Image (spheres, protein in one colour):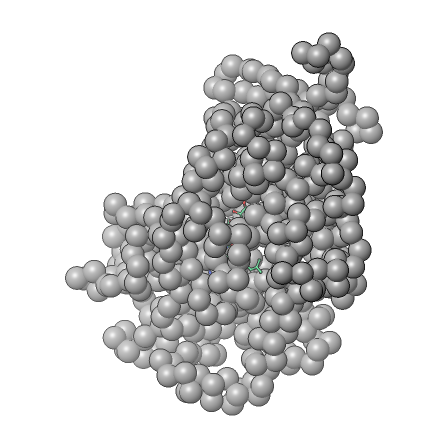
Length: 478
Ligand SMILES: Cc1cc2nc3c(=O)[nH]c(=O)nc-3n(C[C@H](O)[C@H](O)[C@H](O)COP(=O)(O)OP(=O)(O)OC[C@H]3O[C@@H](n4cnc5c(N)ncnc54)[C@H](O)[C@@H]3O)c2cc1C
Ligand SMILES: CC(C)=CCC/C(C)=C/CC/C(C)=C/CSC[C@H](N)C(=O)O
């Protein structure tokens, strides 16, 4: 197909994994001559960030990556980064009174324990997740053939049809109840996984529920040195220009180009310190959740107007504590026989934590060694900031505690209506994909899709957008 001259300038707002991977894919599609400006008002990495505990860095936000997250895998390979194993140790589930499940070192014992308590529900749950994941993997084939989608709903429909889209409109609870899972299994096995991963209950949509349950698969990994290294690596590899400023508003304007012809462009107005600056762009990608608390970007003079976004994001606090766990809270066993490295909790409003687990620093290849005094670094997720009294309840003693509050991921409340990807002619929104599920890979998928969409729309390749029957069409192609 014929190609138009590439755009002069593209702006991306947000240098998290979404924005930096968008820069990488836009560079691949539009070539070396387009100028790409990447705006970031805080740190490159966004929700991929580390916290320091006594000179060592630990993941504070996005920490684990699934073995089938192929974009993240590819980035790490292309950027020459290394990986570390991100899971290990034994898991227990606490209901506020006792541990209702405790993992053993022996695989066969775990199988017997699970079958004894829940029958074959654990196996059936894995099969359900695998089925969703199998369909989800189709996105990689579509994107490798350069196909793009103009909405999150169309993208999901292309992966698994109406059934798949239906996952967005039902709660995980309804979906699994309908599939015959028992209350006991849902409360003791499924709810704790939703609490540790999304800080929410089984009332979240069934798609994000399946994504969350996929974290129980083996082979989870992370980037050695910190997952945020992927963002700085992509920024560099894309040869984009980082502007450390806060975007305040975007306005559509008509400007005379160097050819003498008037053309519609976007003016991006941003602040660096107390100074206000502005610049004009042919294409703009917004790679940050659009709501007042998180990005506070106004769209001026658009016709039709761009509506305000009201997606409510879940408040979660990550606390890292280096200390000796008070295991007697969870179990009557002597401390040296406790053996668990992660405790998840059931949905019990009396509990002030969602989960607690031992973590490795971003440079440790293996499961952490205890320090000479027997203490570990523990990561705690809670809805609210922990008080000193609460930390003292959890630990017999502690050397150090540090916390980071997040507006972490959407508060899921199906039926989900996902925001548009195309906000205006050449203005694209990536973070709407989080209404389906928030994860690093989801942002990378949205970024690849937005780059392809921007490219095809720029060149008028409508045959590469929202194609029906892609799965059948590409089935036989290598
Ligand atoms: C505690 C926690 C644990 C998580 N665990 C996992 C996990 O284990 N695995 C996983 O896959 N995912 C996990 N996630 C989710 C994952 O981190 C996110 O889905 C992903 O990082 C989102 O990336 P993003 O680039 O889309 O958005 P962000 O990382 O939020 O990037 C947006 C960027 O835009 C910037 N910005 C905002 N407004 C403006 C403005 N006006 N001007 C300029 N810049 C602006 C922000 O500062 C930010 O850096 C977790 C998230 C949290 C919070
Ligand atoms: C997108 C697909 C198919 C899979 C991604 C699975 C995945 C890694 C989801 C992340 C879920 C999430 C938000 C986890 C947060 S907590 C992670 C970890 N347990 C921790 O302790 O930090």
